[in-house]
Length: 104
Image 1 (cartoon, rainbow, N blue to C red):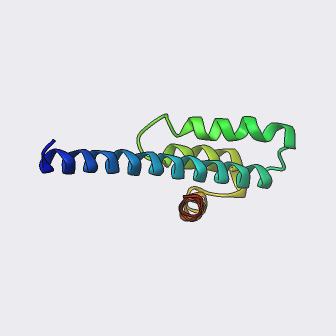
Image 2 (cartoon, rainbow, N blue to C red):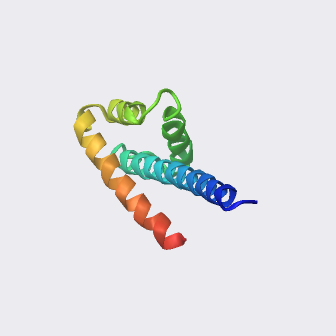
């Protein structure tokens, strides 16, 4: 392999790693958001896993994360609005990044 090939391979590996880490951060933030919302809705403990899966699955409906925010805001109804849920999710993304960095 040439130096160019080595550099290309290194960049590809870094890109793949960064994308995987971003996916994991987003999934963790969605889980944290779901657990926060479930607490506000007084969901029973036996329904938490199902609700977390619902919220995480909603992230695959469209590009971006507005689909998750809309779902959670809709589930919360009068308790919260889109902007509040969006801000909470942003805080959870930051927290998830810190957690992921601590784990590596």
